[in-house]
Image 1 (spheres, rainbow, N blue to C red):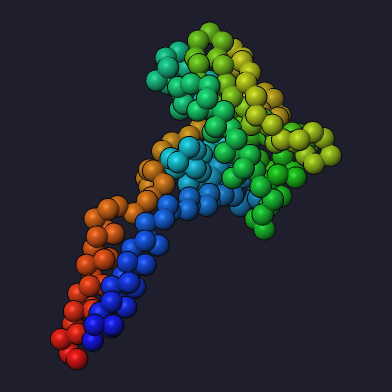
Image 2 (cartoon, helix red, strand yellow):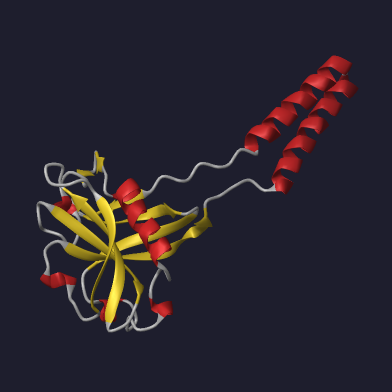
Length: 202
């Protein structure tokens, strides 16, 4: 009886310890329209926080609430904007069964250039806006890259065939999920309860 109790307790502890491991980030879900164009993605992990992304054409002033206040941008500093740009390269601009979105940059909404597509993420507004850019090059051109650039806030990406803005909004899921201490305690107590019942039955 004592052996079965300790075995059950050990099993409960192992389950709790396993559940305590950091949760893996959810894989981004690519959004593809009926024509096969990549229009955005859901659950893109940027520094442990999940975002939904939409590729949109227009001007910074028109798309980002005037683009003249820090609060107008999705990321308020260069570091975070560059992290978001890298997340696009790592999690969104990919070759998948849904489409060759890494190899063929022209498959991204707002881009028609076969050599590259530049997704812009503004972080410092003003008469000239600073933005991080994720540049997805075709394989026979250059390696994909992130960089910082700037342009007038009234520059319209619709007038350029290799530039588009990326709008980031926090996903409903919010932070990448991790198990809480109370759920771990509950798992351990449940294991002990099962062990106790088996001991009484014996």
